Image (cartoon, rainbow, N blue to C red; front, top):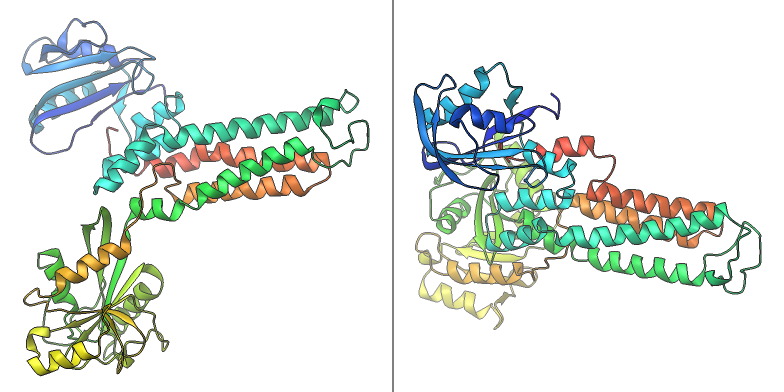
Length: 473
């Protein structure tokens, strides 16, 4: 498929709706619109038009249409939109007219192809496109704010500035290599301006510029963890022995029956994942298999996945025990003691008043449990059945997960990896005495920055990123 093809797609959600938006972009976009409505209005004018079959006969719908002339469009190409009624039959009839017309080179768009064309036309950089994906998929207000800032070019501006500064440094060093006999007195080479040896240390001015750039990138990278947590969410694993109420607690928090609850031990065989919003963050609650000696191969696999979730996938691990017999020894992961973040003593509704008092006596004023249980844990007496204490635990969890939003921050692992490459290349350039090696370090840093913004080496990367887009965007 060629980029010169004119593409079309339903850009609004599928299914029945009051309004549907159909997009078309490419050299034949205006001809395709004329095919349905006859004459064309001026660009940028949203007009009511009757859409008919291409033979001029049957009316398909009464719709609002608009066209955008290149380059003043989302894709940078000639582009049109049809805002019709959201009937599946109407949408199918419009697209069928285009599909069946042999005189126009039209085809259905691939996932994200409109935005990909906008990127290739220079309407946005790769970070803006990624911000747009995140904005479409945003589930929380924090995700929305972060994605909106990125889609509006917050990262693009700072990365382009760094790229331009890197390119200027590279050009300066290349010029000094290519023209070694030119007057270098303005270069500030610490008194070495008249020395013609190819082995000269970086000028103090250039060294200061490289150091300043490295420090800016390092400070930026320190914000990556928070930004990625906002974008991707955090995982909270619920672990414990069988029948302590992990699934019941999950259902209580989710306000739904998402996990099977049974008095039979070993009911949970796989990791059950439920996403909730907490303090502006997307939180994945992971209900895991009960930790005990497995009695079947299936249960053994469930326990293995529970341990894997607690060990490597979860940001927070919540240990759940039966309040009547809180035995922590059975909850080691791979035979090792796990540093749990919270301890929930469930089934508090089954405790006597005296038992409640004994637990209170072993709990310090700040909520940490001491005494018979190992370590100091932020502890809550809860009942998944009645809901008692669950709200207090959720508030404590929200406080622990609280993050400070940073709109100018790398939001993806790809950003972090590229910026780390830039920083390391700058360090190599600064430590080298040979000008040619210094130039290579600067060249590597600039290349990594261009990969970050999508200016080079991006074909495979674009295929991956835009496959995550919905059709019609």
